[in-house]
Length: 318
Image (tube, rainbow, N blue to C red; front, side):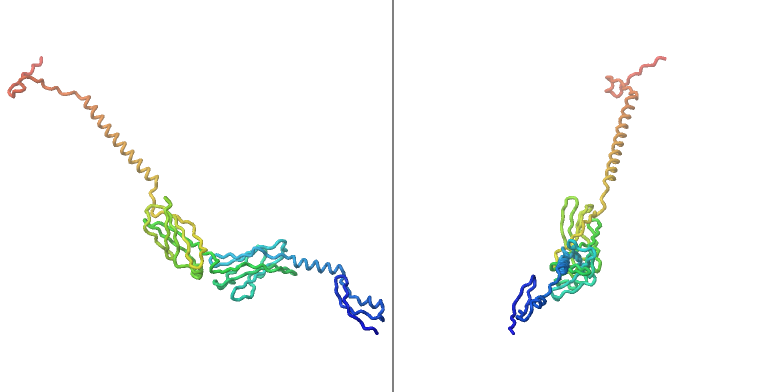
């Protein structure tokens, strides 16, 4: 009996290991030993399903925004994302290198955001976030965000400000909720605020540091002038601070221009009437003097120089 020999046989897309039959094996038996191949239709269906699974788009524009240590994750769905798809979020930091799911963001829909404030417990650690799409029978690849450090990447401010005048000074009032104040202190914010003051009339400005408290007095200001004030927090670890809007007020109540004009007009009218009455009185006096008869003057004579000299008055005709 001839020894059988091993050889490789290539059949379409399959490489098989076969035992070469001896002379005693019939040709019909040799044909039945050929390996079976999957039907072409089934192969095409498998390739099509694999293409669908690979084509599920991953999310894009994964970013983290933070304001006063309140962190929010936003992302955009990939093109042709199924409408029934959901998104799941995982978080990792530099200390625990493993990824953990965010329970509150395990089934997000298109357009929803994820609040990561509780997930980022350590403000001094560096975090990364990743998002993927999940459907009933498909899962996309993860899309990862860049590194995020809460203590340095958050934005502080602006504080709530109100101002009022007090003669030659301004009263500055700051309203900071307790939880927000704790966030500022946790984020390395100082116990002072930077105040920017500008006079409206000539835009003269100056800056000063004031304590972070409910009320402050800004002294040595011009009475009756308008000033605009803006306030921002100071932080040693974070320079991403936002100034408040400008709040303007007068140091003291300005005199209304209309009342001043009316007062000056009334004074001028009174002066004109007084002058008119004086002129009229002088004219009437002079006119009266012109209408009255003038008294006759005694005739001058040579004996007027002598005191004992008298003149005889002419006798009136009877």
